[in-house]
Image 1 (cartoon, rainbow, N blue to C red):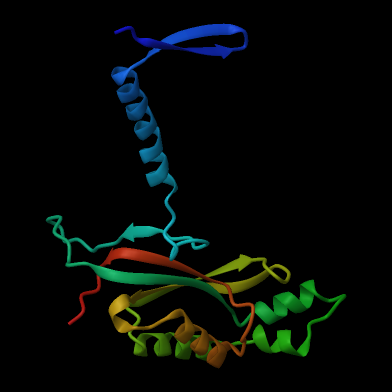
Image 2 (spheres, rainbow, N blue to C red; image 1 turned 30 degrees about the horizontal axis):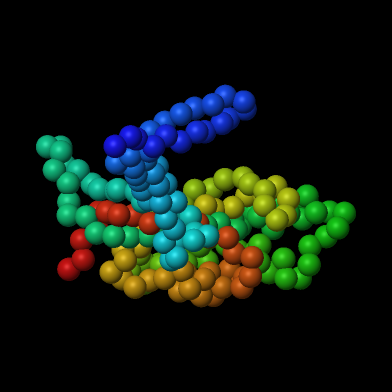
Length: 191
């Protein structure tokens, strides 16, 4: 029985190849070899579409290299005003001036910052770091605090609860920028 041959012409060049069982097998392997990695690589979990997620491992070690048993957590990063923020803005916004709402948002004192930190800890926050720095966002260059708050998933403390505390202490209920980092593992051990 004679093999059938197929002609393929590309840009004037003719290619003849046999059409038989071996051709079908090779073509199938090529199609699967290309389509499977493509399908896996482009699969989109509906829960993750339009979300940025970083998985980070965090642990604390002793001098022998042993780590504590890790659990899942979230790190919230956000900004709060400093006692000097309002003065910085009044100087940079001297031509346009600040609204009454902006004056309220950007005014704070050391006692408010301490109470806010204490309220975070009372909600089950594992720990926090706050650093004073200069920055510019929706308004001019100003001083403020950048907070990094670690919250074990087991506490149930959520972004909405953070926003509620933020509003309570800093009198702002809109335009609050928060970054969330998901930790696969962290130091905190729930008891």
